[in-house]
Image (tube, rainbow, N blue to C red; front, side):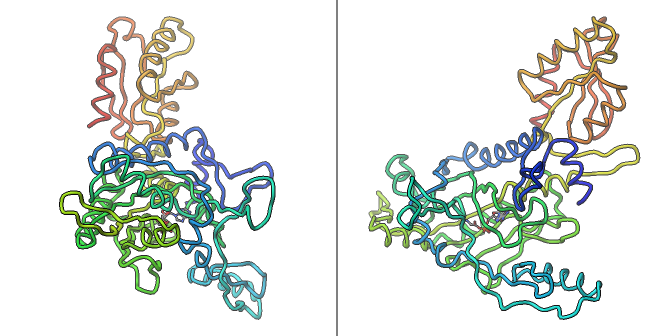
Length: 434
Ligand code: GAP
């Protein structure tokens, strides 16, 4: 994990938030390559959820909502974690994170500290508070959303009336969520500001179990399609004691992170009719749905797959990272790679080669995220691209001037092929879609 954190910083994927001021716990910045990878992840999710289907529409609701939303949802009263304090060093922890508690105790025990004990846990609310408007009092109190899906529930009647959707259908959303986590940490795994990709799929109550099983499979299939190794993914059903108050059934897709082991990557919950019912009650609006053919009126059940971008980002980096004898390579799925192709002039002191390479670069850059590198020897340039997961490197050499062909070197096999410049776009396009 340390190597991945170092690589991510060195190569412009992830920087500590506000680093020059000493950082701020639980906040990270996505550098030039990180923002590309994150955007590619979000694009892949949106494609699978919205563009490839007929029964899901998109939404982008605002982050700050009427505070009644959070009272109705139960977050103001019970979006809490049990907080406990170490009596030796006064560091605070989540009482339900037994691995972190145990490792903290062993640290003190190893140092020979006496009196290792914990305060009685108290509930700590995770919602960040803010004020809307110039007056800071109870009337202007608002919250940064703790989950994105509440914006979907409150827009359910708008979508039904404006989009001619029929149950079963889903609303997909990608957006920021904020949680004042007691112990942010584990790098990107538990942060205080993150993006969620959430689908709320509205179904007839009698279809809920079948749809739940379908979405479980579908989501696992999607993670595998991104290239995550099967042996690093598994399902885990929540015990009834750990299930959220709204859920009839909940499963996690877990990823086997190095050092930390199996941890939640994505949650899939059968939220029943809890959210629409509660918002209906609190808002006084009718959030039921009427089937226009059968005239049956009911409150739909919701099946919710929800995954955090940063957790998936980290899993993908970890899964792709490989140390080989002579190189470090990120074997990212090409559709996720931040840079798709890099162009090198074989030498930088021959103007006709550089000029031709610039023309190839300009051609590719119109279609793909393309890098240019004319420094150092070709071998080092390949290694630099391998380390950030660039699937193809194109070299313009002396033969190019004669034959209008270039070499294309494949990241995974390191094999090189000669390709005509006139076929280069379709060659890369074909490889990408394959
Ligand atoms: N709407 C349901 C919901 O928010 P959750 O299990 O609390 O459920 C869903 O969160 C997903 O959001 C998690 O599976 C995880 O991927 C991500 N997530 C939650 N808290 C996070 C945090 N503090 N940092 C990074 N990702 C987080």
